[in-house]
Amino acid sequence: MLVRLFKNISPSAYILLPALALFMWINGFFTAISVSEFSKAPLYDLMALPLNFAPIIGVLLGFVLLIIEAFLLNLIVVENEILKTQSYLSALCYIILMSYDNSILHLHPILIANLFVLLGLRKLISSYRMERAFSNTFDAGVYFAIATLFSYQSLLLLPILLVGLYMFRPIIWREWAITVIGILLIYFVLGSVYFLTNNLHVLLSNEFVSWTKPLLVTYPSSLAFFMGYVIVLLIMAITKLPASIRGASQKNIKGLYLFVWMLLLATLSLTITPELSPPIMAIFSIPIAILFSNYFTISKTNWLNESLFLLLTLAAFANLISNYF
Image (cartoon, rainbow, N blue to C red; front, top):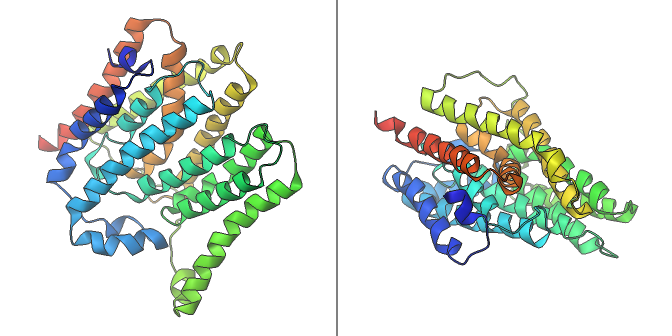
């Protein structure tokens, strides 16, 4: 029912999607937690201290940000024709993938970083077939750099800019240089602020990255089932890619494979995380949401689509309520 409901563009999605997100986030408003412990990234730390005095505001801001990102992701898909048909499936899948565990029901750094990643992706993809894209490529570099200041995991997503330039643009060295300048500009401004406030040593000594093998933690059975099911569904979605690009436009094909590259780079980001926790895994939500929505778009077996998505939703809800038992 949900897949069929959101498989078309309908104004009802502007009510139904936030309602679904609120239903999944409701527990976060009653169990609001401190946020400062989740990141050592400069801009996030700047926000964390005042939010610690009112954790409920952090949850509310996180919820609003999730809705904005879901519709922004869907806008990118629709306006750039990444999928063969217009729908709200990308927004639907993103909400589920960002709401399946109580530990991410707040203003998590990756949630903020994802906003700037999406803004950067929109600039990058929309540059396709532009005569000149200096502004777009510069803005994309700036947005991705800002994302890393909220979540250092996003550092390993920076190469997606070069992948995107290669896929969507002719090779113009000035555009590549401008993209790098956009990235370096943000880091220059950050370093300057720390230097002028005599805190440069704090930035340089910040052990924000752990280049160690991620700890293998023991997951509750409900969380292990959800994550395992997502992996199985992801494999099914990837195997459908060849069929989905048959007869598709070049922009459609390039868009899908850009998100495949993003999935691969997100996997590399696990090398700088201390443990494979649900908040850390949220970095996969953007590319997986696209691949899931592509699968449900091209699959013609309605009962299978509904069954697969229903199981995904139930698994997410089961994990959310598992803490009560």
